[in-house]
Image (cartoon, rainbow over all chains, first blue to last red; front, top):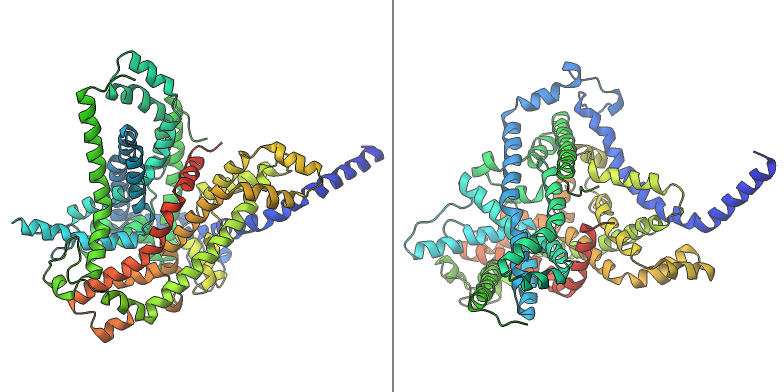
Length: 313
Length: 290
């Protein structure tokens, strides 16, 4: 490079920086945040393969037995973990089967309402549960479903029936858990579908009406295909999360009588790791969950692309 | 417009009634709670309270308001929510705004750096060990810093910024405004809807979250309201008045718990209906990114 070109380059860099330096200053804090709180913890992932000790630095820890896979082997040999794994899959699958269609159905029905004012009110009410915390939702569940003084059982007993142990018996608990999941999300989840319905070309409906299509034919042949891309994207994300799932909801709903069906990986890690101090074991569990999660996401995306749908990237 | 057939009209009413039913399912738990919080203890003990209060009184609320532990948690959580929301909005803006400039060098690398964090999370224990290492355990900052930026919310804001015409920015650049100036005087004033949406998301997240306090906070002076609520509901440690006035009395316990839950819910229930038109837009932006 000639001296002149170099000088020009330098001047160019000067001009560029003079304009853009502020953007780099702005990005500094967010990137520092991600580096510290999202990337730095990855250093500790290696304790899944090492014998953890409080005093030693993580880099100097000795490798665990079985070429470092001791804790993975231990986890899969552990009954509590196997229950947690099974429950995570079961509850997420049930959420998918019952919880996923609920907002779609609700959006389709809202779309058919012809009184706009009424529709608005119903929407506002249906969004409400999304703004409640899981602790509050569980306390509402207790108020409603408690064996003696819960509203539902009070009504049942008054009608001559017997009290149902909604929250204290395994099978009933699963039902209540899934039910309140639907309750919390059906309204909020419908927002995306309503927006997607609003984007459908109205001429399609008019043309169908001219052809004599009724309400349900239009729903089946225009609305549903119209929102199919949205459904597919959300389905992929849900499938990718089949082994994931939050902590707040299962932890709030758990009680000692139903732990066999209610303990999921997130709560298992908290109980055995943070409370029980078995850091290596639970890091291994967390790593397993993360890796399988990414794998599921890639698979779901791959399959949807094969089927001719738009993936999520 | 053709006249609706009878079957069509019947279906119209079926849908209206279905929606009424759904709304009732949403509202009944809250009504039951409200009724219990306002009822006399005698009626509660005899299981006579359904959806309307019996023996109307505000004793439970008065008792809760006198409880120092509850008031402390309430005030602390309000403070925390305000601080977190402001800090998070600032961080989100600082992250989203630079990324809309196509000529920003290193933009692609930065985008990848950010996206990776959405797919791979180190996990509960590594996060916990990091907090320990940073001496954040039981430090009030642990309830603010770890969640101060949500990449998902950042993407929502960035999509909104993309929707603001470039020409506005370019004409300001020609007038000699710095890029920071353009953010303050053009982008932010035009972004009120998305700012309102994200403020609501962050505030609700902070107000409703309890797992971080549960895992990282050992000092009960800094318990968030939801964690206190969790402990009360599960009878882990009871409110101070409880020991004085007998939380053990079944009727009183029920109305006190109901009043506490009511108190913890009301702030958000009062706010969200007014922000509805904004957050609907925000959710949609998040779902149809780019």
